[in-house]
Image (cartoon, rainbow, N blue to C red; front, top):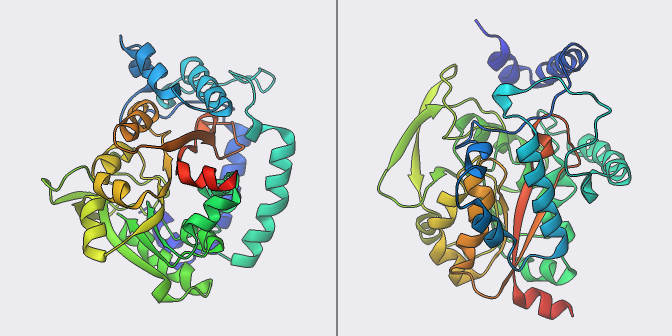
Length: 351
């Protein structure tokens, strides 16, 4: 019997203390490695070998700012140079990082992040202490945008697609949402979400939890999957070690209509399903013109095709590509790359 799920549920602080020790030991005895995720919808290497990759790269980089173009170029070099996760191997710590360091990966940025996050962790006392840089330092890219973006979204509805245990909902309260609608596929994570929101004194009228998976259309009504309750939980993962649950599959347009949501900010980090999310959110996005923060690092389809797809129907938008973690080891060399999308009027107002 695996005691892990029981400990995590009943004694979370003991569980995370023990896992921290185990992870520390693994770092000593296990090879240092950098690798590329290939288990969430496709191999980047196979995709890059396709005949139309040059046109895909041109479409992705079209109309991006210089920092975004540099981020895309660096990430592509890493996708080419580092092995898929199934082939991870030992690397010398003295080797230069493929593509060089991005601004977020410099020593100064890492120091700034490391100085700030411990204080946040102590104040919040989150169950599991799940404090991500992307959520609590970069606020899913909002901290990188002009003050006019903050004004644009303030006191409006937010959508948190891939809510996990409420970490984003807790972090984003600093941006004064009217109400946040949190969409999550894991029943176990939802229970932890409720506990964390209560522990942070966030009133239940400030959030709505929607137990569903996001898809491109409503032709398939539900899916059965293993509810691990983990951060990387995805409908794309095939793991049968945990309880099987059935979850409804819905488009964002359908959810927005039912709950009368008029979002000004949408964060979507749904472990490889970003294209599905976009295809099923077209009406909501056109109608409300929200600021978007979409994770595009899980598979090559997200990375190369999400931005060109959005450009087909979201007119007069600015698109940015930013890496929202300072980490490099393991799959962090390409993790937490987000596509940040803002309506032009935000930038016009800031001039």
